[in-house]
Image 1 (spheres, rainbow, N blue to C red):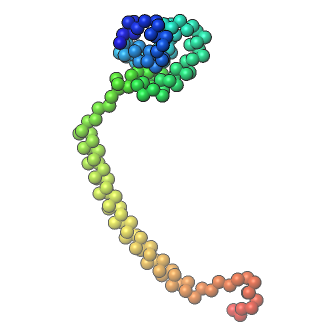
Image 2 (image 1 turned 60 degrees about the horizontal axis):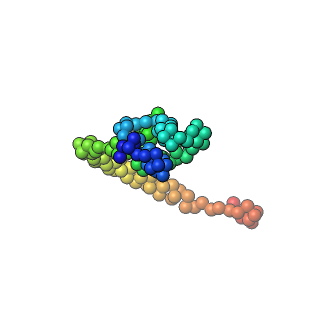
Image 3 (image 1 turned 180 degrees about the vertical axis):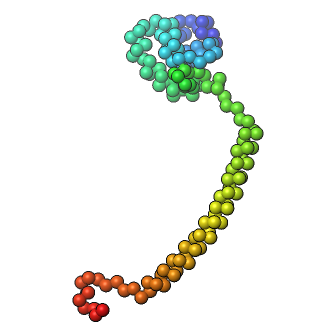
Length: 146
């Protein structure tokens, strides 16, 4: 649908996001939100007061509508113009990196197991040193001969 082929009566009954979609589709390039909304206001003869009072609502409308995508520096475009491409060789490289990382982690686990065993041995020795330890409550201290 061409923007210029839409009658003013049709425009008045259309929601702003549908009008914005038609504008971006026809332009075929990204646009600033102010420019898009200014075109809408001009075509509907809404005037400068409507622009200032409704630009925030228009921003929210585009931000919540899945057909639009916000780009850097205040530009907006149709999401359909920004599809992501998946490069299989990049995915394979990532998988190889993960395999190498897992192998490195296995080596770390073996080292960690050795040191954990040493800690357990040291803990056992330390526990044997304290086997004759007696804890005395202060209130009974006078009753015990040391």
